Each structure stands twice: as structure tokens, then as C-alpha cells.
Length: 110
Image (tube, rainbow, N blue to C red; front, top):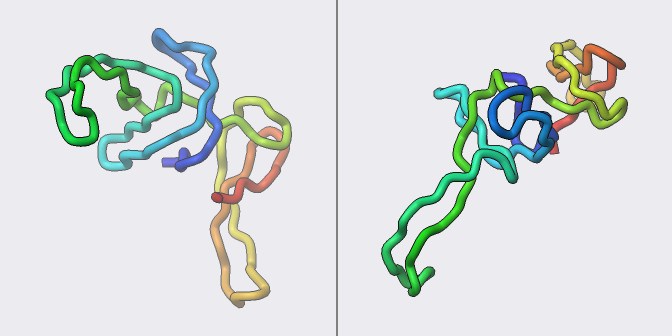
């Protein structure tokens, strides 16, 4: 999966097509992600200590990773991601980094 937590993504299909948001959680086994402000569902919850009132709660539901595209921070356009091997001088070993296919900028995870 080329999408990671805290990436800025653009939704390509579905009811939220064209909306940008930050990835909150990644589920690699199911190939699904939760994007901030996208795919809201309503769930009924009974009263708990954290929520003594209970009631109907709106929260984001997972969407399939194929329906989003990572937005490159440098060129600020949705772009495909590639892999590139870079030699790390401080650790004296090779690392694999994500690279924007449009501008060639390396994406480092926060």
C-alpha cells in the first residue's frame, strides 16, 4: 500500500469525489483507510462514562484505498507514488522511499 497515515489524499470516486483530507488510520489487511471528513456514517451508542448522554454519533467509515490518490506536498497535485532506493550515509545502509511520479520529490513519513 502506498498510502500512509498523515498523508494528504484526494478522493477519486464515490459520494465524496473531489474532496481532500488527511489519512487518519490505515488498515493494510483490508486495503482500506479512514480519511478525515470523508464517508460519514451514523451509529447509535448507548450511554457510557465517556458519553453519558448516548445517542446518535457521526463518524468516518473506511473507504477502499483504490478510491484515493496521494497529493504531493511539493507540486500539490494528485500523483502516483513510486519507490526509489536511497543510500543513507548516517546509518550506512539502503532505504526505500516513496517518490512522486510527477515531480520526483521524495515523500518522507512524519
